[in-house]
Length: 197
Image 1 (cartoon, helix red, strand yellow):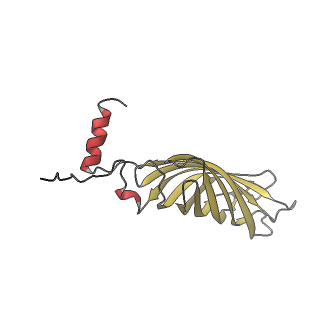
Image 2 (cartoon, rainbow, N blue to C red):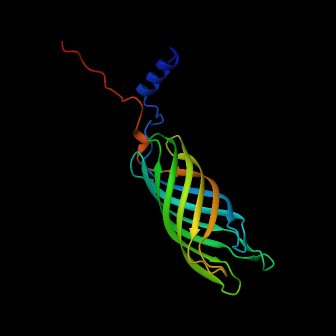
Image 3 (tube, rainbow, N blue to C red):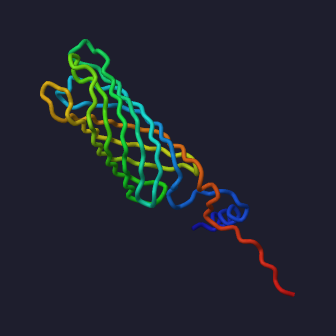
């Protein structure tokens, strides 16, 4: 480490200036995200934008849990682009590769999806499994950025050919963390000791 950096770090620690903690935050967070949805072939759906919200918490160095709600703006291709928006809710577990504030992660989850896949049948609800990959980067004590890809596998869809349907969502978003880590510092503050006389 350079000679000029070490004194600055020591002074910042002694003055009580908050610094980024090395370990990942275990604070609760809310993540707002948006992106694009791509429906599998034979779905009769044209994909579009997607937006959503996640509320979660990292439970330890490598594990986290979150609830997700999302909406994808789809259209029925064979019905003059009639609206067929998809709404979904799920519970997701995340496995983070690294324990630091910057890490790729793997997502697995279960939920339900409400969508229109056929104009004659109208809106229906399907159970859903989620498989995903992503990357999270914390910025300071309260903010973070996230990029991710999720494959939402919809079961028992009301399509003429039946079966499961893949809905791939590519998203990016910003996270806000609250509570917890504000008092953590890289260097502890040590009170001066008095020498005995």
